Length: 89
Image (cartoon, rainbow, N blue to C red; front, side, top):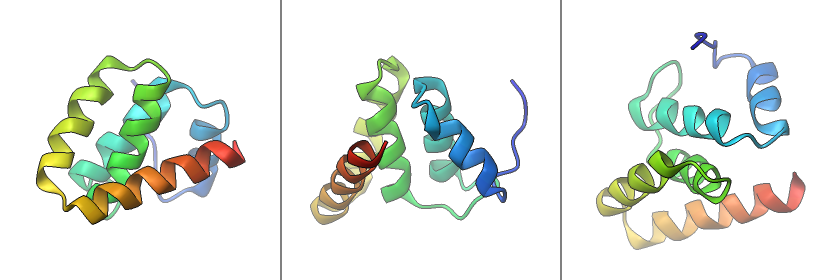
């Protein structure tokens, strides 16, 4: 898999524009590990949630794991962010 520079908004736009579950999952992985971006479990959960909705089975596991480390308010915020993304894309 190609290495992407997450400092580029162009990648984020390109990765999410089609809503492909692999690109969405990769964004979740980057945010949960802090690889090339600032670590943010809420944003990671958002991307895993979207990837899971698009059929990525691994995203379901990671989303569940993250939820166990997050507050209920953070999980709710991640879900709200995912719904907003869906309404715009």
